[in-house]
Image (cartoon, rainbow, N blue to C red; front, side, top):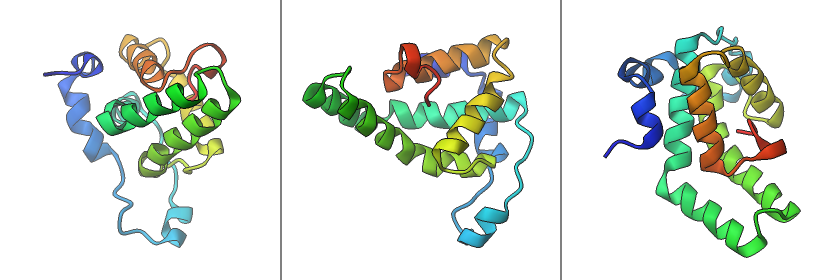
Length: 144
C-alpha cells in the first residue's frame, strides 16, 4: 500500500533520494565537519523530503508521538519539547547526508533552503504532509 505522500512524490524522486544523499555512515566527526554543503536542487529537496517522510511515517515514530500527545497533551510546553527531541533523532540521521548540521540551526537552514521551492506543488504537498505527520500546526509549521 502506498502512503499518501508517496503517491505525490514522483518515482524518480524516490529513487534519487538515496543517490542524492551523501553516505555519512563511515565518516569521522572531522570529515563530517569539513563536509561542504551541496546546493539544494529541487531533486535533492524532494529526496530529503522523501527520507523525512519515510522516517516520520514509520509506525514506531508515530507511536512515540501519539504516546507523547496522550501523556502531555498536544498544547503543552513539555509535549513540544519532547516532540522536538523525537523529531531531531531523525534529523540527526538525514540532515548530514544533505550537507546540513544535525542541529536546530541546521534544521532552520534546511527549511529555509526547501522554502525556495515553495512554489513547486510537489514540494508544497510534501511539506504539508510532513507537517501533518509530526503534528505541526500554526507556529510549528515547517518545524521539521
